[in-house]
Amino acid sequence: MGGVLEGTVALVTGAGGGIGSATVKAMMDAGAEVIATDLQAPAGGTLSLAHDVTDQAQWQQVADTIRDRWGRLDVLVNNAGTVKIASIEQTTIEDWRRMMAVNAEAILLGHQAMLPLLREAGKNREGGASIVNISSVSGLVGNAFAAAYGASKAAVRLFSKAAALEFAALGYNIRVNSVHPGGVETDMSELICQTFVDMGMAPDMAAARADSARLQPIGRTGKPSEIANAVVFLSSTAASFITGSEMAVDGGWTAG
Amino acid sequence: MSRLAGRVALVTGGLRGIGLSCVERLLDEGASVMIGDLADAEDVDLSAYGENVDYVRLDVADEDAWTNAVASIEARFGRLDILVSNAGIGTPCALREETLENWRKTIAVNLDGTFLGTKHCADLLAKSGRDWKGGASIVNISSMMGLIALPKGGPYNASKGGVRLFTKVAALEFAEDKMPIRVNSVHPGFVATELFAAFPDELKAFMTSSTPLGRVAQTEEIAAVVAFLASDDASFVTGSELVVDGGYTAK
Image (cartoon, rainbow over all chains, first blue to last red; front, top):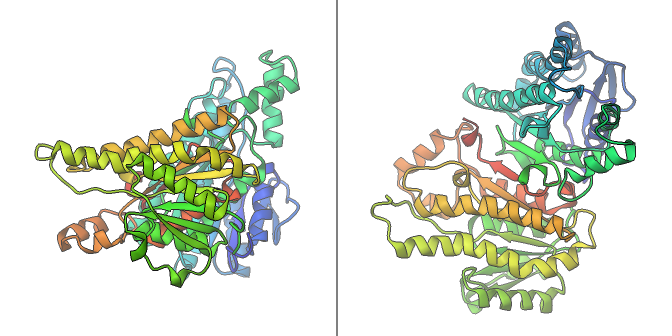
């Protein structure tokens, strides 16, 4: 799909991971210039930066870097996330705080730090500037052994709607939406499968992966590129009337 | 852009409004399109749209008309990859004044029509869908009124809510039966259709001011979403509802 993001400057956090790196690639294929960030500067992107999304000062540094080179930001993809699968009894307050910090707090910090640059882009961009927050099916429906993760991802869902309404009310011309992936073939999913094996909930990795595939009615997990394509869509002018929406990209998981 | 090259689409209610914009967008993206609508074939002039478009008279509430439409598509194009169930009707009316006749008519077009389209197109869609990574695609045009109520929504609200969950049932069944057909619903907010243009100024002002983006949608903005769901870019999207309402239901 060539060119739908021609002339677009985009920031993707968590760009070292599966969905993040696929998003960087899909956006560049669609013509965007992409700032790719992760805890360690990731491969790929027009510009690659080390960036801890829980650190407010680092967000400001990233914003300054983008301002110096481009003067605006058309698209912000808040993709960085972390998960620890555990029973509620076994979840430590440190686990909880870590997931809240990376998955939820960082969304606030990202919106705050990038708002001036997004407003600048919104003045001229057809369809407005666009923020895409990566939530999860776990932000829509309950999942056993993912209470803390689900709470953090549900926060992303409603934060996105509030931001959409607020920016509309303020006349900023910035759309805000959330994407809710189902199971996707990533390192994070492998980690989740390994945890289920370690907890004795699956006999081995093959069984854990099969369980994970079965969560989707279409019988397979998604590919990172399939999530990336949804992010590209929401970032493009094709989504010019979409704001405050949640997009499940989950092979039917939450339909039933 | 030729994201839909080689594909054949049926768009119901395709002569006006959102339907017509869908036809134009799908053609732009390389698809061939059969338009289904209520006009008699001899009254329809598609000469402006080139070779890749055709027309069949289709009352979506009439089961025989569907049998005929599917046969026409097979004869003309030999396949069907995309079904856009867009035909819909609705007039605001207080429920104490609503007639059973109008209730049934609204449900017949909006909900029976969606069911009949899915039922009669499924086999051809499944066959054609094997040629694409993302399968065939059914896009049912519901409404934000399939998610939230408005006073005097009556049968329109009920029918559009029905379309939302019927869509999910179809998505799950086709997945279970290993039929390569994705099924999703689109939920437009207020849209600048011909119907909208004819509304009293007061109603138009309400629709504009109650939408957080401060404007109603252009029909092309709904069509762009339909094209995305029809394409392989949405290959992992099924049973989903895509809300295109300028933020109306986020509040």
